[in-house]
Image (cartoon, rainbow, N blue to C red):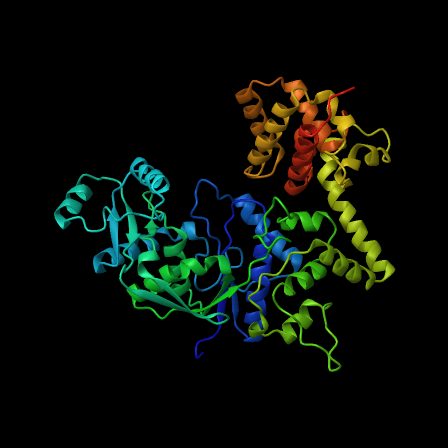
Length: 485
């Protein structure tokens, strides 16, 4: 490697900041520090329907809470900006035009309806999914006529169907893909915004990224990226695909089984040093001591000092919350009493700030805080049949509605009282529910009480994962509830 090392992460601001973002950021930062290189934070916000600045700010705040800093980014600037992809649209459009002119890409005029019909046919006849190539070889005259008519189009990659594409990965060696298995991926959407694939490659090249360290779920996209580098006649970066964080059953970590939001870990009282220690052990290990003793408790500085990307093991590490809790406990016990007092004051202060505005008119004495907010700290809610029974109604129908609401809560952005209020109002209207009765059911499921601060404020004060867990537990409890004697 003759060029200065430059690495990056490119999170999407479409929801709560994900623990996987911190995991990949940690290894990118360690690699950059090891090689005295630069670590870049780039915001992938081309999904205009879902991206928002609140989520972007939460990404910045959560990474800073962890102590992970970046050398270039939207908030700190740098010589390769802008660092928000939504501000680089003209760059992607020009590069898409270059690909069309070279024949490496083509315009696709298929409508959404036609593509949906194609997808259903593929399912019906058990064919491999992917674009069927209808527009791949349209006569030039027909393409020109459609463009002249201003027919909407996307730009697709022209994947070589008779060729083997070989990708080199530092941890996994050569990975071969058959051309017939590579989809003619959309590169530029009809609205003029790029997809991940085009923006990723163009940005990495223009920002002089030398190593792409990302999760292994992107391995299947790598041949498309290699083809784009080849089409532009650019040297590709070195690819390093980190093992996925996994649930106990080895499935990909998901918010249905593990808390994925960094906000959850902050609010639950995990120390940044402990969470980083835990994430560093996901697929990597510290060199043992001279006597062979394993080292699994260390600081961020110790991790940087001993880091070597080649020690990463590609087997899927299990995201074990019990292990995280044990590591967190050890880090807490290493603190002095004064340090713990300061941390507790800071932790409690965050909850006071989150709740003071809706407790203001309810407190007769300050100690009432505990009575009104004990639901914030409990882990047994949603599981008490006696508490839920008076509001269960038709048990199976109620359980079904709670399940549906849980799925809709997963998509709420941003996680604030206003958006929660709006969702609940639409949900009640759509299902023809009695607002008072349904809200009481939710209040009991989420707070464990029929009397609490405003429901939307109470829900917003909790981490999304906690609310989803309580609603899932309530749905299960109600569904399995025995009839009243």
